[in-house]
Length: 307
Image (cartoon, rainbow, N blue to C red; front, side, top):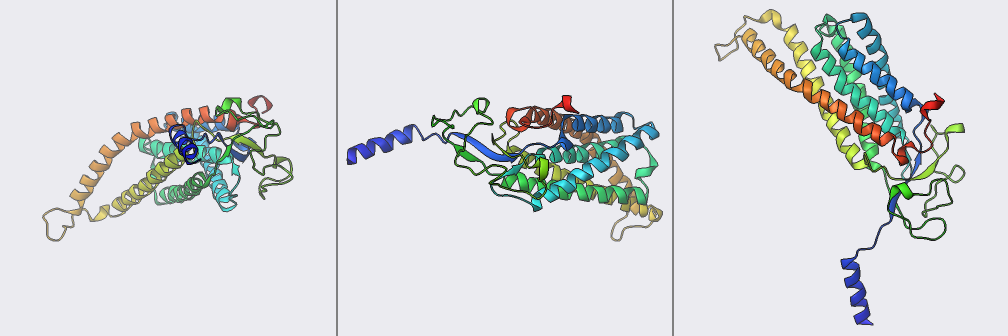
């Protein structure tokens, strides 16, 4: 018997036990982040960048894009505050999409534009408040991605071994995966009631995984914090410009010369930040759209033809 146990142990070491397909209990992506809403948001953010010299077009697009990303940030805060351990609201992907693109594209537009509205005290205060709210939403979404749990599904509804290929997952069947997930048994969410309470067992997203989304959201948070710090420093530099000839104690330099140095450094950083932010925004759009149209995330979401 000891020999048999040793052989079985060695066999398991060479061929580890298959954990099966990782699944989640999830509410599908709502219509607020459907394909039509996302395309509209993309058009708005692209317009703010490429039509930045036309103030009336830029203002109209920006006044629509900023509230959308703000609403997504508030939604992210609500999702984090109403977290359910055994379920995931797939709207976290939609909210993350709008918040991340907002924090990447809006600073890019401000760097490229020469409009005076962003250099005034009121304009910078509004942008600072908006950035702080979106940052709070990104932090909450980052926490939600980190807390998302997956569960192994070893058998299908007929007792056969479950394939590890997500494309072969039997959606909508009586697959239990030993997971409580139904409209009658729960989990329940106060923001998913009425006709929006449909909840399903789906494979865990494998294009933009929860771990990858956690890292990307953290990077967007860092980018937003840096932008807010730079925006504050630039505003302080402008407000103190009247004291340009006042010498700095202990040196022969004046505050005006140091301001010129700071502005030059900011100029070089802006030149480097423009292509980096642009490429990051394009990459997020491409990867996220592939993820949105993948089987698990697209399941039971509102089709573009229904809009």
